[in-house]
Image (cartoon, rainbow, N blue to C red; front, side, top):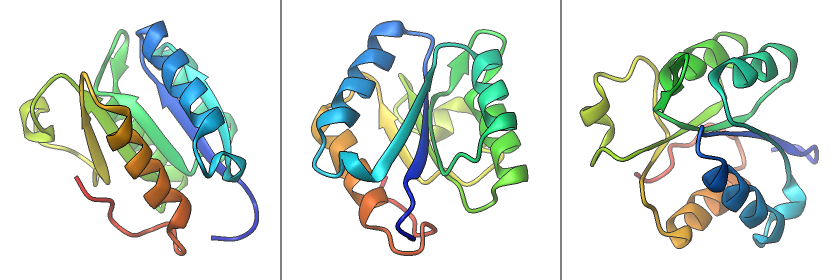
Length: 135
C-alpha cells in the first residue's frame, strides 16, 4: 500500500457495536494507518460509498433498508480492490445466503476483539491491498 491512509467504513445498526469498533480502531497498534468512517444505517453507508473512496468495508450482513452484501456489491463497482469484512450472528457466510462478492474475512457475532485486531493488522500489513484475509 502507499503511504496514504486506508479508508475504512464500519457499518452496523447496533450503535454499541459501531462505537466499540470505532474506539478500538483508535487504539489498535496500526491506528495511524486508517481513516475511519462509521455508519448506523444502510442509507447512510450507501451515501458514504457513493461519495468517498472506501478501501475496506466492515459491515453487518443484515441492515434495515438493505444488506451488507448490497453495500459490498456497490462498493466493488467503484473500487474492485476494496476488502470486505462481514459481521453476522450466523456461523459463517454460507448461513447468510450465497455471497455475491468475494468476502475477505468474516466476524461471527459476538466476536472477540482479538479476532477483529487480527483482521485489522492483516489489512494494515497487506502490501497490495488485495490479499485474502484468513476467515
